Image 1 (cartoon, rainbow, N blue to C red):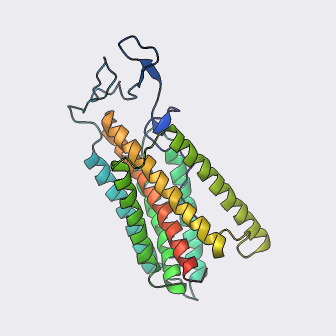
Image 2: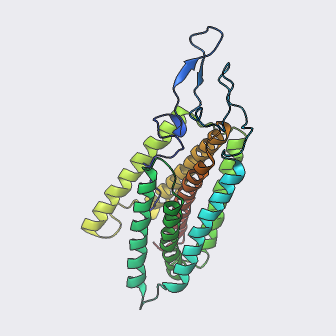
Image 3: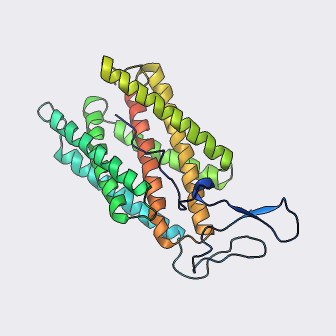
Length: 291
């Protein structure tokens, strides 16, 4: 069972090379201090965004056409609802009993590959395409439905509800920690998370390679004590990406991002939540004593 969040994708609203998905080109503030700098609003050309040109401080948009928290919530609900719908259909239509398990697994793997391709295409597009995002969500849902059904059938009937509750708990915990500033997302935080994610994914790829060559679980990163450790690390990484997602949403609203960018916010949040759910499901499977 794999984690499907493409952590190497461009997670943000701007397509420049700035922090947290935004262009962080700096300019001196008025007042003469050459060392006091303020970030340039990457949406300064957006007719709906407003900015204090004297201090460089963003102001709340006064007109329609900009991204709001309601837009983000609505698009995220639509995207997650599509994931759930795909999972329910797959759960009901693709049983994992002895007679159908090979067929169901084959369709699940195909759906996961299609979802990955759609995610990569969207990640490298300059603008969000709702059809691509919802297509990713639907195929990812099919994959999740088959995997969840398999875990329920062969591991524990309670594993899926536990993984869902765990994912919700992580989301709520990170949101509270972010809003109370227990978590501060900055360049150092983002760089550390990306470096850790690269290392994590490389280890998983090496483990997959050894598993394909020698059979079993390769180097043991997905079972036993190491499996538990890496499952916890995977969930922590997902939580860190949630914090980055929250920062990007907050910045997009503050700087007056176009309303269509809320689809990118929904896309990033959905990928992160899928990542956390899969890692939680894997961890629960190991803890149940049957990998």
